[in-house]
Image 1: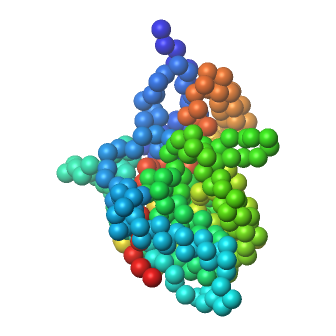
Image 2: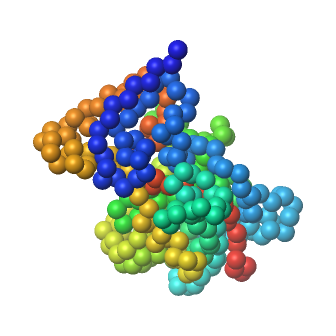
Image 3: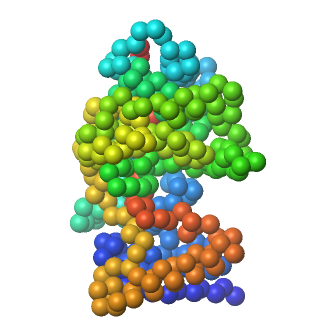
Length: 331
């Protein structure tokens, strides 16, 4: 016998489809895949079928693979053995990132009956990397953009955090605490584990941003990132100069087909709080909501259900996938 426990709190202000309007305050026990969770995009879910056309999916002996390896090695060399003279404004690489956004039910197939702007969207974003300006952070970005798995070619954009659209979230990526140090694992294989890898990470942590975060479309990395956050990158959605303290710009978007980034930034997100008529009419609504949420999150943890751990304020409530990453500028 299966037991389903559901507590409903009005959350009509979350701007989601009907079953999402009560998702934030609902929890499930002993259900393999609850119906109300099926359209919530989690980075750990299997992606719907698609073809990935990125260097990481090519044969190790292919010209594309060899070129990608050469670009990564050159980027690492710029950081670890900087030349005496550098041109910080030079565009050293340009990568194309293919992105697609699912409809609200998590699917991508084209339908004749799509209404209210709910059809899936796809396009390409081109990013110019200025590897001389922030060589260590640029090298880490290119490592995951063009390298073999884990690769941004199999990642998602899943969070809007203030002025940032967060990307680089990968399936199969995990972190483990070993003697107080967070170690990055990909399918049980340690990533960025060599001595030169650690030196590159150390350099990235103290590398100042070459330009201020003064506009939208800048691609940036958090300098002090550890564990799984090492893979993350972000795109600015507007001016955010306060990011200069902790983030380093590695490049900027030079081409955005159909305004994809702006479209993603306007997608609904999970608020993580009680909203709507119930919250307005009930003085203790926030406390009630938090107590219920914490109760069921605790219950989920005790039975080994990790799905709710992947839902957080700012979570994009659409599936936004990267379908391919390729090198455009061959220098």
